[in-house]
Figure 1 (tube, rainbow, N blue to C red):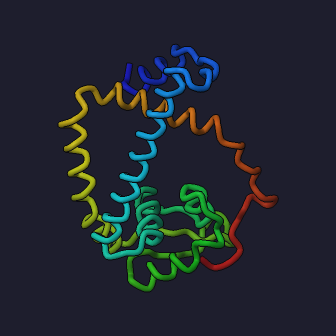
Figure 2: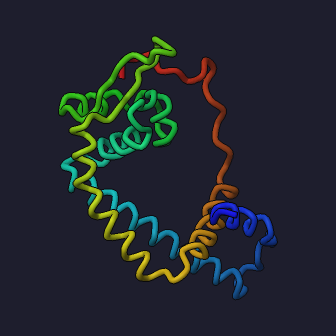
Length: 185
């Protein structure tokens, strides 16, 4: 059984309790956990900003370039990138144009749907992202040094993520027409 399967099984075995009474030790503990999660989120945002600066990019451009690079050589459509970045597809053409002008991103017509544009990181874009990789490597080394059982931390973080997801209102349904981008991005 893989580590992710064990974590998934543990997540299913853990009981889900109702809300703790306000002012109780459990509620205070939950508030402390939430405060730590917020501090972690701020730290991750600071890391992403530092990575963007190391790559010589603004954060939106770094995020788009990193997202397309993670998709591999085939890249992804503007709609797919927007969904992963949790932005509207109309927000990406300017950022994509900035990256394309710098030779870090390529845009081409999607062979499966001529209305869509496919984005791919170029070799120069991948090299630029590698500049930011050293910061992430330092964070990973610190995690290994500080966290004696990464699988336990992963379990706790996945439960926190699930708790936040369940507390949020549901995401709106996709727009009719599949949310395909019609503007050249």
